[in-house]
Structure formats: C-alpha cells, structure tokens
Length: 325
Image (cartoon, rainbow, N blue to C red; front, side):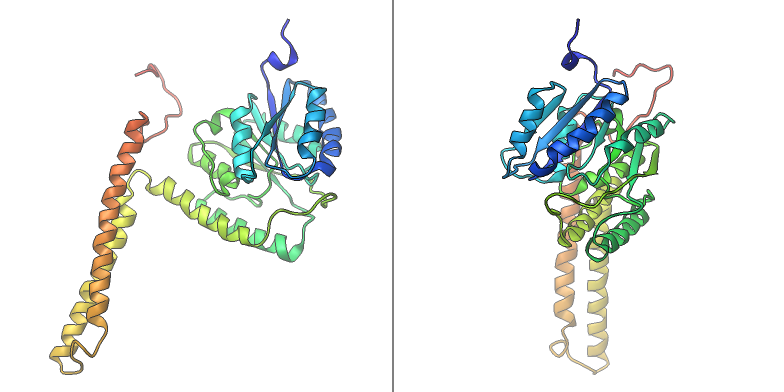
C-alpha cells in the first residue's frame, strides 16, 4: 500500500517564509484542518527564504510529524519570487495554491478557490477587497499599480499583489519567474490562452512581525511590467523595438541637420552658433547603435529558441495529429 507521501498529490500549498517564526504554528493550526476537510491528497511546500529567526526550526518540527509537509531551505534570502518558483519546482500537485505566511491570507478561502477552479477556470486570483493594510503606504499605491498593470496587460484584475491564488499546474509549465514577476503569472497564463477569474478573499491585519515591503517595490514592479510586456510582444521580433527606436533617432538626426543648414543659409546662425550639429551627430550615432543592437537581439532570439528546440508558438490542442514530431 502506498504511503501518504507516495500518493498522487491533488493540492500543493506553497508558503514562502521569511522571519515568520512567531506565526508559523498559528498558520498551520488553521491550514491543516482546511486541507483535511477537502478530502483530497495534499502537500504543503514551505520555502524558508533565508530566515534569521527560528522559522526553519518551527517548520522542521511540523514536518517531522507529517511527511506531507515539505521544506525547501534557501542558503540566503532570495526574495518572494524565487521562493515561489522553488515551491512550484518542488511541488507535485495538480492544483497549486500559493499563500503568505503572515496570517493575513485566510486558509478558509482555499475551498472557495478550489470550487471556482472546478467551474472551468485555469487561474483563480484572490482579491483582498477589504484590505487591512496602511491606507497611504500600501493600499493607495497598490490601487494605482493594479490599474496600470491591468491597462497595459489587458488582463483586468483588482489585486495582482494578493499571493493567495489557485493555478492548474499545466498553465505553469515553462513559466520562469524573476524579479517581482510572481504577481504577473495571471498575465502569462491569459496570454497563453488560460481562463482567469477573480474571487474576493478575506484579509486580516498583520499580527506577528512586520511587513517586508516598502514603497520602493512599486518601481520594481513597474520595471518588471515593462520586461513582461516586452517579452510577450517583442520576444520573437526585438528588431521592431530597437530598430524602430533607431529609425526615430536617425530621423531626428536628419531633422537637426536640415534645421541647422536652414539657419545657416538664412543667415540666422552659423553652424558653430547652434548645438544642432552636435545633437545631429549624437542622435545619428545612437540610432545606428540601436539598430545594431536590434540585429544582435535577433541573433540572440534565434539562438534561444533553436538551442532549446523551442518553437516560437504555443499549441493549445491537436486534432487528428500526432503531437510528436
């Protein structure tokens, strides 16, 4: 007979932990009964993200009593995105549910996420509709960021920053996360044909420890959004970005040159009396450099796909065709 840790796993709960020793026992006391009540095979993958307190010891104590509790221990603090990626890599569940370790996410919402997923959605994203965070430092910037992300990506969600979500494993295949990009998984999924839903979830005030995030995170998120949009729209043809920018710079160079000559011929200013010739040279040089960078990016893109045998497309299904080439 197969042991619990050898069975096929249906639900994997991923919990990144960084200096959360005070709340670990309380979190698991709430989480374990919820998972047991689902009557589905489950596992918890807790990722200790280089904690400097007793987080690892608390996790080890819990794991020693239940083999379904797994631990991934980082050598140093790598950040939430890396911790979630490790959780995805080491988990085995058909459904993956990440959540925070600070008790602000409510484990009681997990059955609701699962029920929504069973309606046919591929991603169910939690929405902290009544968020219990600082209104000025956290809530207001979050609303602005969420609106911007929704507008740019075309995937409209109220709360990209909520860690509590439910994913079907197959939509995470091939997704690699960097920077602060874990919040953009619903975007990746939607762009690849997944159906994304949003569900209001509970949000509790922080009881233990303190928040690990500051206002500087907004800039990181916006820069990662820029990278995400670039990779989606121009990964296959980067020359359109670099080359387009280069052509604009060359056009600006020509305009500056023409304006400088007009000023000289009309007697209004000689070439040494205006900065236009210098601007023309600089924009011409930058334009040529940008176009060359675009050509180099094209070569790199082809190397990326061909070296790994990856096609520049994603097939959703095949009919009367063999999937093996």
